Length: 355
Image 1 (cartoon, rainbow, N blue to C red):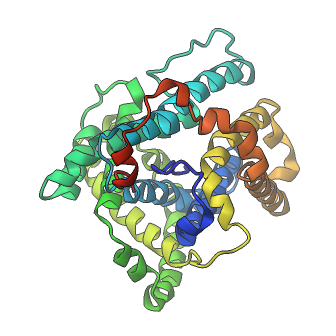
Image 2 (image 1 turned 45 degrees about the horizontal axis):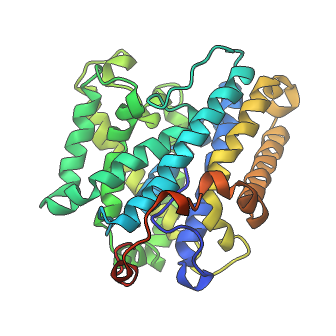
Image 3 (image 1 turned 135 degrees about the horizontal axis):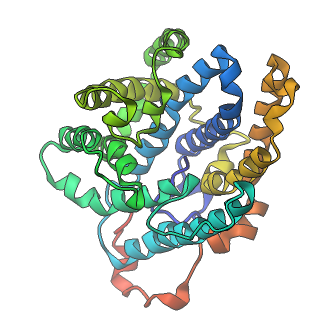
């Protein structure tokens, strides 16, 4: 899912890093494709393997980048304002919008609006709110990543964790955010070296082959990180083991993904600033398509049909990241809300209290 970094999205292009914008755009395309593949994978082992392969790293990649841009987050008035306007308000608006929309698409006219139970894509905003607020804590401890992994492992042992703010998923994805907090620019330069780029090819090939083998043997719901171990009908100790195993696999594939992300400005680089728009808006199209049972058509289950669907979805999410769409929906995704906040003290405007 997309990364609403502490920046507001209004900075001049010269102040943005092309690598991260490229990474966010490519990742949001994979997210949208994954949602399109979901109803098709039951009849294709190859597509199920591709689905499992992509789901292993596309969300971790987004979350790592989100953590990286939260490295200097502090509870200053400026950062709190950005957190409210860039995370809290979009969460409230889209949680409400998706509830109303899915009353029609899912045929549940009485579905209540619940801000404590994130619906569909909005879980990421709820999780990001919690991650950002805890960032100063993890920056203060000596060993933040082992601590975060311990929290995630304990979450898999705790089926009593309720659905409030999708806390199970928030805690299980926490290590990727904390990893981003720990990274520095030199780490990204390292994974983009020629040697790592060359190694990424056989690693990707091996991961795809393993995913093909694992399709009938492993429940891919582990990749969603939203349930405790007992929900899979396995002993509780599977949870911590899977936490560590998936973290290792996801970080490895995420590094391989980053190694092949272009570092120069390309035609889609500017779209990286609008990935939150593509993320939050494409779900309405996916929900509507599922309501009309588009996957019931036999052509969509053929190789040509699957490729066609992937291209259409990639084009759709690309369009949703463009400046015209962002101008229309900025009131919901990046509201200014000057009326709701006191003017920042003059000295804080030049203090650099946000990344």
